[in-house]
Image (cartoon, rainbow, N blue to C red; front, side, top):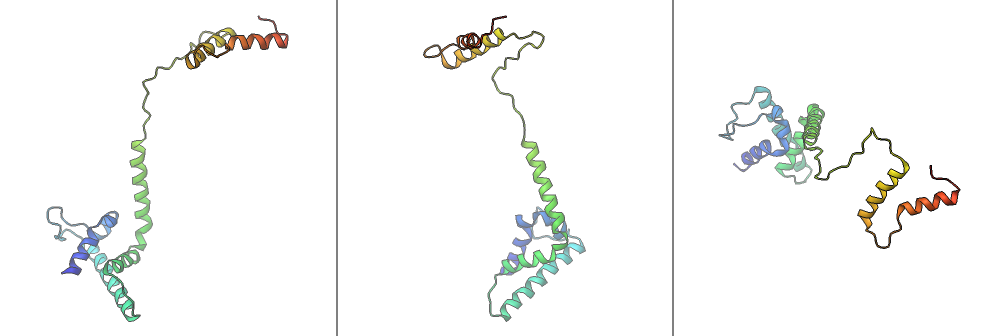
Length: 162
């Protein structure tokens, strides 16, 4: 009975959820009812069981120990090898779709001040806007005004105010 429980746990485990079309899946109301599986699914299950038995027997002949769960896992990898690439591809596609649904751009509560594109910005307007933003950011104490810096740069370069 212990091996029957291990087989049931193996075939209904989350690891093989992606292979439910290959091995079949029991009825949700009666998890021990496998009557809904197709002949091909039954053959796949039997192939895994026979392969696991051969793996266990081979280990015993060599004087080695292997658990039933480990033998079933190795047998599953051998039997499902022809469809493994397809299952992995489907798993990746499913994960990408799941992640893409979670990516959203959420607007913040911050009000963006969008400049009026119709109005041409002059240099003075740009300086005033930057000055107001810097005042808001740094405050008045210990801050040399941006306009004063711009005026000093213009006068040192010999530029006239237009």
